[in-house]
Length: 453
Image (cartoon, rainbow, N blue to C red; front, side):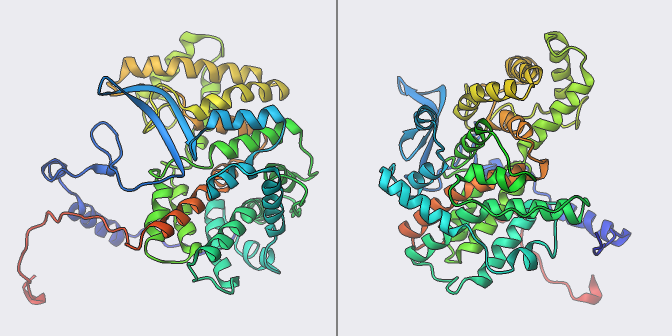
């Protein structure tokens, strides 16, 4: 695909060295001024920056006045995620729309309220006339998150009242974005797959009678076909990624940008930019690639010693990407367990059997068991290590035949609900712009005229 190129010239390299030298801050200053790097203390606990009623992440309990690690728990509007998902599974129904209602409005909907909400979302699943042709197709991107962000910002131009931050108008905008994120993501991929990779182009319209998960699979696949188990597991994945407290990077970004009084499209585009980062939304891609490398390096998936040796080589920066990480293991908050991974695991095994990938599932299970032992032996850690949601989500997406390019957009399709709830909460509760403080550590110095420098 034709495009513009700008070489990194020797002059740019030289200026980069100057920038690096002048921009470096001595780590001792962080201790001197008690600055929490990454807004976290030495134990990894986040700095308290706000209040929320939307969700809660629990990894410790207070026992005898002391914080004690416990099994991880995630609550949506006070309801345990395990209980919430178990309700959908028991009734054999899709839960994305119901969970979205819960996060946005604070209560589980009645049957009538749910039907009304589903109808609202279904009627919103359409894009402006010629939007697919003029916006999505004209400049396809290899990074679908980039394409998604561009589409969101362009929708501002089609909105007849884009800057109105009154709650009814913001809710209207958020409901529309929740409805069309699957279309923007899948169509963005189809454009890339056709114009960049030279494959056939498929643009399938969503079906108003289907759930969000079903429509994603319908729009993505050439024959529009999928199994009920596939749609159920994708629905579950979307629910588990929908929200995770106010402290994650993209949700915090939503609060920060919303506090400035800007429009919804700008706030959500900023959140997308945050989620795009590999330290946030792209972790499951690393997991899948790591396992792909692992399967090339080991001969016997059932040999614990061989698998364990590979994990040690990962930590020693001798395998895969030489980063010294076992991807999918560990979390900034959870220590003993990630409840999302626990909910996932049983259903992942069921799909693996249906897809004939039992051996892959056994390998994942072995790594989940061995990795904490290897990490504890090789590294000094301040809290426990367990599999996180990314450990299994990438495996799920690969079994659903989702392309790698859509892994992070799937995260966005789910998290737009949480971002919307937090944007509403920010607008409801504060009229102050979020403005943190930074300490300047460079002393004053005199100005020098040009001919004296």
